[in-house]
Amino acid sequence: MSESKSTNITWHAGQVSRQDREKLLGQRGCTIWLTGLSGSGKSTIAVAAEKALAQKGRLTYILDGDNIRHGLNANLGFSPEDRTENIRRIGEVSKLFTDSGIIVFTSFISPYRADRDAVRKIMGAGDFIEAWVQASVDTCESRDVKGLYKKARAGEIKDFTGISAPYEEPKNPEVVLDTNGQSVDQSVAALVTYLQKHGYIG
Image (tube, rainbow, N blue to C red; front, side):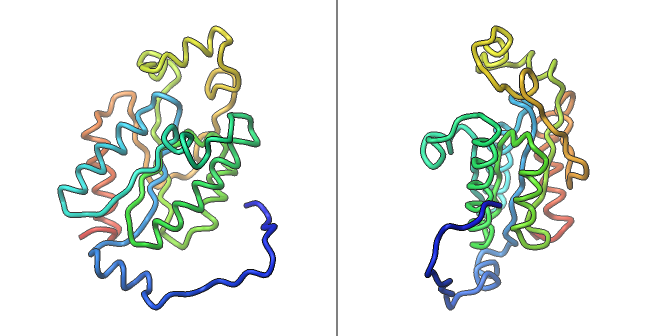
């Protein structure tokens, strides 16, 4: 990730370890990185999965692409450089949430493989779970609840992923959620099963 410009700084460790926090919560912290085209179902799946886990007594948090751009990343656009910085910041925030023992859902298009891999590298082993929300451009465009594809086709939105900007598919994601035909409930069940199978939740 980007080189630090800060100098004369020292990391201050606390007296409560990550293991202490995870024991308190009864779960293992992780980041489930939902990536895919606009309209593939990332945010919908994150919201439903958060509710499902909350009903099981698990502590989760969602970092959503649009929501983050209202505050933390309000100064970033959608150029390749800004997209990279957007993901860098979210990666650092996700790392903090994960260290706190929380199960984090991030829903970002995050179109560049190198940016997603950079987030994985700053995480501990097993902390980053790449979940590819797989849907074709046709499927996403048929939903187009925000009218973004229509605007992109008309040239009103530049650098729109899948139309005028690339999306680099994950090579080895931990989870694939094929929402071309898979329901939201099926996608959520797949995520919960993964978390249970790999010991993040009991």
